[in-house]
Image (tube, rainbow, N blue to C red; front, top):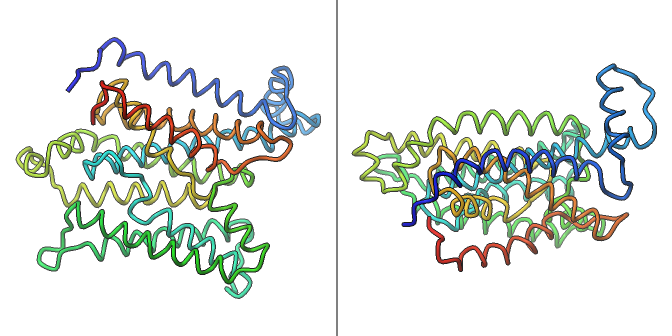
Length: 345
């Protein structure tokens, strides 16, 4: 295994921090309408003084662009940290945070809302769709955890958990396919568009909810980085070092479910961020989860802000579903990374 250059390793965090600020600013500034730095400064100044007299571009920045850029930041961070956690837990480099059924469950919950929403008898306004998606994500992950448990000791092996996740994923995606088949045209388009990810519904409410979920789960996951490092050497080695593996699995799975369910509920299914970002960072500074988790949060926000900016500029004034951009960029980048000789997991 190649040992990363310590000097290069120490530069990664401040570099990511600077890039995060720059990409968030770029994402908030450019789109169908370009907003100047003077207008951004003026909008922030008026906001700080609680002034209601915002010009048109200032209002676009405060009500649309800024919440969208911040939502990108938090969703990207959730997906990337979820990917790093799951790859460490499964000791498998091809695991995505949604592989245990979370994303497919969220897609099924959203599809159920689009097709049968009017018959639910439950209306929570703008929160109805996120709640339906979140309920689907929690249900599918709960099924994976319960079905993968051994009848002998109630624990679940990593392999059984992974295979059960694949099966539940297939089951819920079949459900999405069936609902798409019976849906009317507008409903089918909504299911398809949501399934490819969209930030068009960003609001300060969604920023608040996803932001709390992301910061809370990242803060709770960092103390377990050392135990994840031990687990990556193997379960027997981790047990020898005093790691309670069953407890660690439950905590990591719970944190991943909360982050991915909440993020997916507001923006739909966005692939490849949780897969690519941890691999890229491992090439820069190794597999130590104490730095990988923290840096994944920053790099995930950077990547998703760039993807969203691309999605809005390529076909403006319309926009591409962001999942198309992350897949188009993520696949070749991922293949190039894997073909490098200095790659290691």
